[in-house]
Image (cartoon, one colour):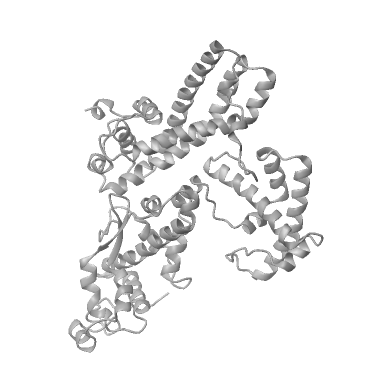
Length: 485
C-alpha cells in the first residue's frame, strides 16, 4: 500500500506535480498519445437513453488534473494513476475529485469488456454491447453519488499490491453477476471445456447423462471411463504444475497428455470426444443456471418429426376441449409464475435501505399497464434517472425468472390435461417431446413481451405476458387507487 501524502493541494505539493505556470513553461502540450490515454481520467462513459455508452467530459476533473499532469511525460498514465489513488486513500479535501477521476478511468475498462464480449460472442449468441451496457454502466458522474455505482464498487475493492487498476476493473466486470446472468440467458457459459471437465465428478456426469440427456447405460459407462482417465492425467498434471496458483486458466490438453489419457485412440479423435462430452456438461450448466431446458445434441432437431400434442386429439370436439384446457392452464400457470417472481423480488427489495419494494411494484404497473416510458418513471418513483429505473425493474431478469418457473409447471399441467384425450402410446410420445414444444411456446410468448417493452411510447399491454402481469400486479399495489390516477 502506498504511503499517505501530506494534506495539501497537488498544485502546491512538489510530490504531486509542478504548479500550473511552471508546467506550462516546461511543456506546452502533452504528446498526443499520452493526452489521449490520460483523457480517460476526465471522460466518463455514461449510459444514454438509447442504451449506448457515451463518453462524457467531466469539466471539474479535467480542470483539476491538467496543470500537474504535464510534469510527467514519461510513464504519464502510471504516475497519474498512482497519484490519484494516493490522494483518494489519504481522504483529504481533494479525495472526491481523485475518486471521480478514477471512476472515469474504470468506466472505460467496463465499456471495453462489453465491446469485447459482444464482438467475440454476440454474432453467435444474439446480443450486442448495447444489451450489456445497462447492466454495468450505472455511474452518473456525480462527485458524491446518491447510490454506489459499479465503478466505485471496483475502486473500493481494489488492492494496488495485487494488480493494476485496469486489470482489476476488467476482471470484476467479467465476473459481474447480472452480466453473466444475461449471457447465460443467451446460452453463453464462459468456462472452458477443460475447466468444465476438470471440476465435474464422475458421479455428477453419470447423473447428468442419465437424467438430462437420457443416454444409454453403454454411453454413460463409456463417458465415465473417459472422464476418469482425463482426471487421472489432466487434473494430476494441473495440480502438480500450477504450484499453488489457483487462478491459472485450464489450457487444452497437450498431445502427450492425450496419448496418456487414451493411448489406443488418435489424439485428434480423442480431443473431439472430450469436447463433445464438455458440450453436454455445458448444456446442462446453462440449463440449471438460466432455465434453458434444451439438451445438447450432435444433430439439429427435426421439428417436423416431433409430435405436436395439439394434433394428438382423435376428433374435433376433443381437440377443442384440449385446446381450451391448454389455454386455461397457460394463463393460470403464467399468473402463478409472475406472482412468485414478483414476490421473490419484493422480498429482496424490502431488505434494502431504504426499502425499494413499493417503487418496484409501482414501476412495473406504470410501465406495463399504463405504458409510461422509462424516462418518465424516474421522478414518479423517486429515482435520479433512467439508469436507476432499469436497475430497479430489471425486466429481463423478471422474464427469465418467469420462464424458469413456468416451463416445469406448464409441462406437468398440460401432460395431466392431455391424458383424457390421447392413447397410452400417444401419451408416452407426448411425455418425450412436451418440454421441447412448450419451451418454444414460452420463448415465443416472452419474445413478444420483450419486443413490446422496447416500444418507447404509445405502448399498450398487448402481449400475453403484459396482460397477465397487469392482472396479477393489483394484488401487490399498496394503493391501487393512487396508481390508477
